[in-house]
Length: 271
Image 1 (tube, one colour):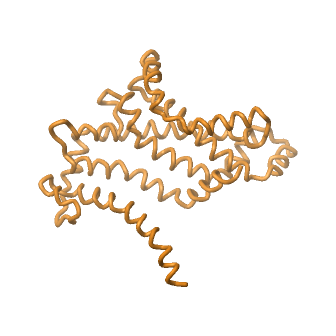
Image 2 (cartoon, helix red, strand yellow):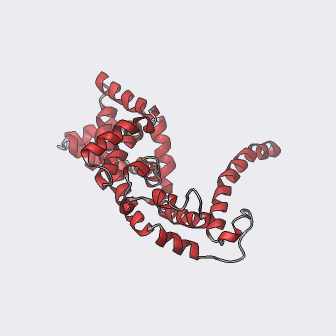
Image 3 (tube, rainbow, N blue to C red):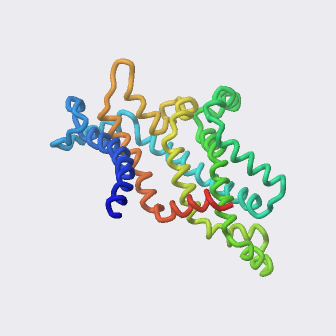
């Protein structure tokens, strides 16, 4: 019996190893000189901190950090508010129209975002939204609102309706029920929304490269891509910059990890 359990654990260990190896190469490369980068698997015998200094200064990561922080923070805040107020009626009132709208949101998840790039880019040019915070924020809110509504609707469906009825009997309005009763119960799924959408928005490259073309409006991913050119590249600087970019998300996950799995499973199964 014990042997069979060990065999079942082997695939999980292999999957963990496949995920750990890229991080190992990333960390070791960030502390190596360019002349030593050919030996990817060797642990450095020294700590070459200049990669972090050069990446921070040459790619203007200070400005990129502020840009990413503003865009990600505002987009996540809007997703939480819009996702909550949109998901409550979809979950509580099972009308045909609401079921159609919910199905529409779910169906939009399979649409490749880049398939809308050409008309969207032309629209942004006409609107004057290129290289602006609000343009990128609205863009991310548009594409990540369906998955947010999917998670919130499923989780709200697991909350007993009797709580709503009791609050309404006590004189609370429907808006009061949402923000005073439902929102405090959404901590697990809100943590999931923050982590899942936050990682995607923070690391976005496919849209940022087209809609944030000015140097002072670039995000982390676009700023680091400047280290790769046709005739030259510096892997050490990119690795160091990637470590810096990953730190805020790693810290955020450490604070929210106890809610993450509960919110993800509830949003996916309930509803």
